[in-house]
Image 1 (cartoon, rainbow, N blue to C red):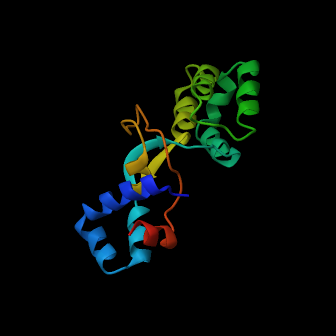
Image 2: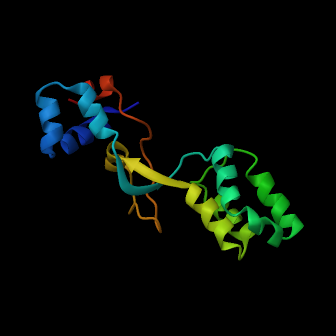
Length: 152
């Protein structure tokens, strides 16, 4: 749910863009919501990494699993058997430590912890938003037509 302070920030963002301002002026709330939900190049950590995404990341580097010690491999598979919190630096460090020098596996898993923020998420996020230093989400989700109406 978007707070009134966040709505004010998003309104200012939309008013600064001629396309979004047109949507606001013409009460085109669906178009305004879609505008807020466009992905940007601002990188953020996911709030949660579901097991299906971690499994897909492991598949990219699956050939390197045999190069891990049995203990590290088992610990990595155990770690990824549950949903992970990418915002936790301990999770990121554990993945890095467990993968060691198996860079295809490590890089695939570390990349799966990140995603691109939408316009609305970026406007409300903190940090630099680069791949090397992802931003932190303050608001996460898509802006609905009703929320766009409230922002307008």
